[in-house]
Image (cartoon, rainbow, N blue to C red; front, side, top):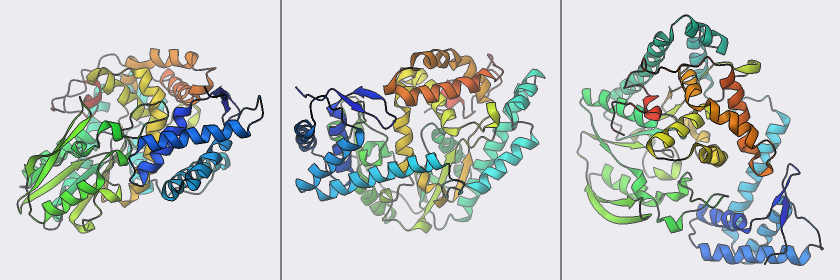
Length: 446
């Protein structure tokens, strides 16, 4: 039994020591460079703990930094140079982000689509939906149905514009990629885009990249021990790329099938081939991640990015955070369609967010078009569904050092929803609304 019982976090909080987190960190670094040997990760983790116990005087509580230093040492000394490099790069990246947050840098981020934001903000001001007070005032005047219609019209116009760009490039484009972070509305956007392109005479052939997941036992885990489906390394990127190259050349491939019930992939299950007028459609979190389509020339790809770029000021004159909108959406979707507990979604959201920041957000400005899926009317609807939960979570996590992220998010969303006028009746929201993807009642088959 390990002598180490506690660790000191960077915040200074003292929390229980969990060796599985070391194992998972090592395994994730190995997966990033193509490794899939969890047993080796466990052995290396044992070495890390052994060194810590040997060098730590009685009563000493190691810090996160001390543990990470030993992990680097063990990886290098055991000949795992590539894994060590991946681990060091990830560690340095996290340190850089913490430093940027601490300094509150005024330099504009390269990952933010500034021109698109200006368009969205201009629209919000024009429709008197740029502050929570303005939104509440319109609801008080009985204008909720109008808000829904105006918002959906703007969203649909975005998709129409994307379809027209694809039509202009129809002689070149062979792959349409719809990408974006969790709960941004990729599925509804893909369906709507497909309908428009079909009317233009384009035949879309979906490639479901979920079928390319590695077997569950080979997946990296998050720090709570749950299998991580959020990282692109959970997918067989090499095989996806190989199949895409073959398909575009007119060859037939055999698509695998991933059984989520057993956590196993069955290879060469479904034959697939595209004709000269067909376009491959990919709807994926990681559609913009370069290794997935690195064998395809850029002019053959149309890359669409979707994000709820809502430009609405909440309490304290601060703009509503897009990640908070997506968090609420995912809570409702998973609770409605997947019987997944809302609290668990909150507790694991920081991990989802970390993966997005590494593997999705950096490619925002490398796309051909950006669709705004932010809906001002989702806030009053989400308040009716979620406000009591956030009220409870603020109290539950207030003094829990292991759940500081959950508390921070819960408190922020609680204060936001607190000032929003609630709308209990969601009947003005049509069945083809993007929000129906998350709250139920959609006319689309997801």
